[in-house]
Amino acid sequence: MLTHARRPAFDPLTLLASAAAAALLLTAALLTAPRVDAADTVAVDISGFAFQPGTVTIQVGDTVTWTNNDGTPHTATSTDNPALFDGQMAPGGSFSFTFSDAGTFDYVCKIHPAMQGTVVVEAAAASPGASQLPDGAMGSGSGDRMPLNVVLGIGLIALSLLAWSGAARRRARPMP
Ligand code: CO
Image 1 (tube, protein in one colour):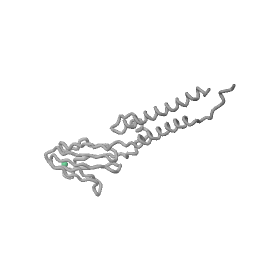
Image 2 (cartoon, rainbow, N blue to C red):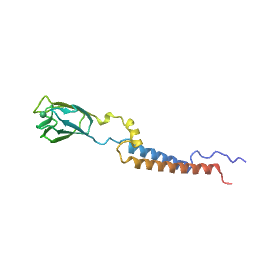
Image 3 (cartoon, rainbow, N blue to C red):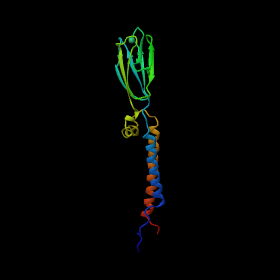
Image 4 (cartoon, rainbow, N blue to C red):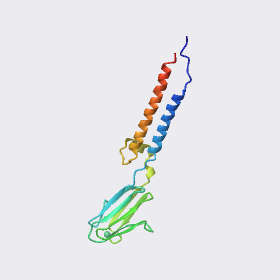
């Protein structure tokens, strides 16, 4: 007799496995895609009447910390008007400023105008999310949520495969 009549294309277990796989992909995408690099702090050393390095490139949300290692007071004062930042530093002192807007910001020491520096602030969105996804997925960054995501993902994959193989076995051995 003909026992291999076509079964419905989607049995409940196959549907369940597909749903689990879809949920896994969605979860992974949601957890990894919006990952944004943690804000960094970049140091500028003031030494020998100079900002070192003279130009730093950061991302929106990052902080620059100037430290005065000279024996005389200095400032880090942006040249725009009004000044976006104006840090006064006694010898050994430091000043920090967090940049919340993209742009190129020139600054000087008000006391010694020959001391000049530049902070280039790149928009965080300038880095396409697609290129950040592999970094996050590999767990190579500083994100400590990633291992949990990986464990969750592997668990969901395993559950999906189990459900899938169970459904396949039932298809392979029809009831007598
Ligand atoms: Co100075």
